[in-house]
Image 1 (cartoon, one colour):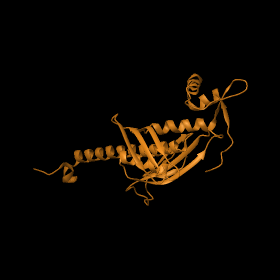
Image 2 (tube, one colour):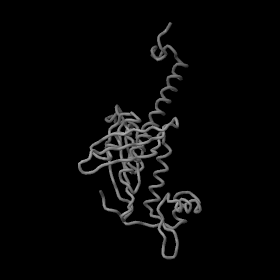
Image 3 (cartoon, one colour):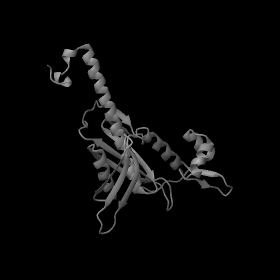
Image 4 (cartoon, helix red, strand yellow):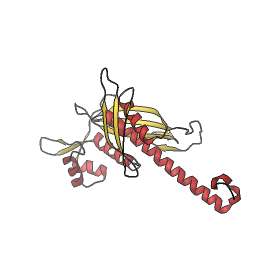
Length: 232
């Protein structure tokens, strides 16, 4: 775990400008506890730049959200088998709940999520960083996963840019979580990566279907016959 860096504080006007919201909106979020706020001796609100950047990254990640993490609970300790229960809100609006055991609390949570979503992937990177200081420090977790069966050696594969600015090959998806509970942040990060993977798969299927339809319209005889079932 890296050492916390020096905190830079922003005024209400500076923070709201960076977020692209009205100062009144940011003030309401702070009063509701949606974002940490610090008061100066003079009574002015100050916001840690790390908290603002985390909120921005979280909003970008939510644009890919197919499954929403509603609840996560875990137990772990000396002499105990790490166990986790997660509750997800699915694309169909249905609540799904499952539990699993793992080698640690994070592994147990990821196993429970995998039981619900059932999309094979490989965790390729897991990183934790403290973005604020103190006993209530906010932890930032970044993960990267590889979709099972995705190409890893094709130098011509397309790339995307992760939230951290890193270029990444097609089939690799990053997720970002931030919470005072590092384990919960890890769950949020994993869900973010999974949602990006699922969204990309959905778009890929749509593109393939459109390509098949376009190809059939121009040359029906040139497409595989089994695509449309047995001929009669």
